[in-house]
Length: 92
Image 1 (spheres, rainbow, N blue to C red):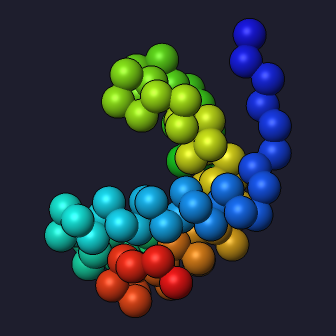
Image 2 (image 1 turned 120 degrees about the horizontal axis):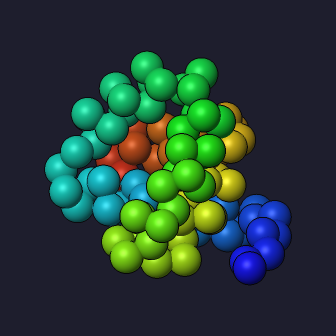
């Protein structure tokens, strides 16, 4: 069984940067911003959905599924991701 440890602030920033860079690489900055803005109140529910679908998502995301779920539990992380995306998806 996997133990879940709290993400450090550095790891949160790293995940946000990687996610923003991936979204920018795919050219999906505008749709991602719209999606995050509309669904911001439901970020916790989305994080729990990630955990529920972990067995299906693990082949795609590996061990990062739990980390992304922890990331989206906190609305401040969603806000930080939005800031990254609004700056063009680059690391800041």
